[in-house]
Image (cartoon, rainbow, N blue to C red; front, side, top):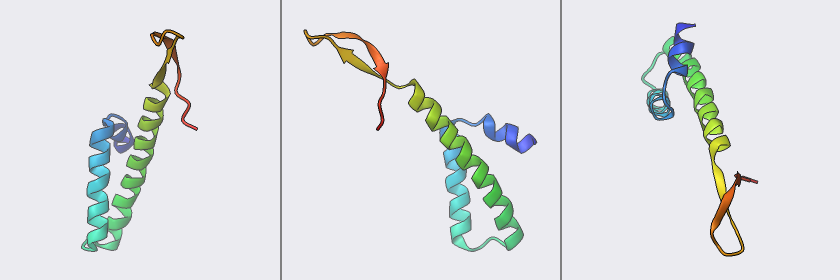
Amino acid sequence: MAEEAEIKSLSFEKALAALEEIVAKLESGRVDLEESIKIYERGEALRKHCETKLAEAEARIEKITLGANGKPIGTTPLDVD
């Protein structure tokens, strides 16, 4: 539970850096099985956290709408489709 709270407190950048570190360790093949399982589980939690942070950021992004004269008149939610 403490680890979950620690992960939730990380910024996107810090969580991504920690995830990249885990991937490098796993790819190196120099981690024993038990440690691999442990860090894989942490990596999965970090991945989910990063996805949540990205979704939150995407929801906040808006596109500026322009009037007939080319000047900004407001914003609308970004359509990512």
